[in-house]
Amino acid sequence: MDEEIKGLLKENLSLSKENNQLLKKVRNFQRWSQITRFLYWFVIIGIAVGAFYFIQPYLGGVLNLYTGGVSDINSVKDINKTLSVENWRDLIKDVNQ
Image 1 (cartoon, helix red, strand yellow):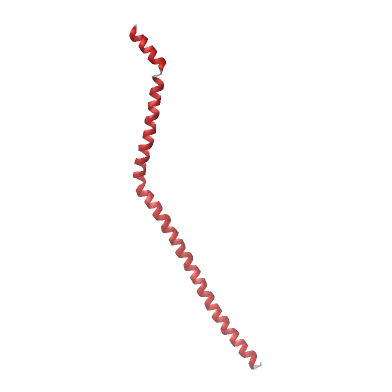
Image 2 (cartoon, rainbow, N blue to C red):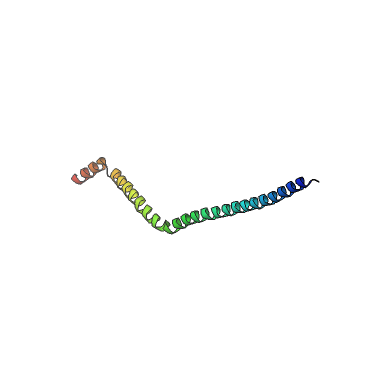
């Protein structure tokens, strides 16, 4: 072979090896980036779930307070329905007789 062609082939081979090394480094970086991204979101979601787990008793108490208030209002409305004007009139008639 001609010396110029041999030189070009050697240069091409060395550039290919260097390119292969750079591509392996880029792929390795992408792999670690994916792993750290997964761990990042795992920690974020884990903290959110853990916080909800520890705050849940307090939230349950607050929700029971509010829902208990609503049920008390509903029970007052039910009492008001049972003690309607007609029932009062009947009671007054019974007392007067």
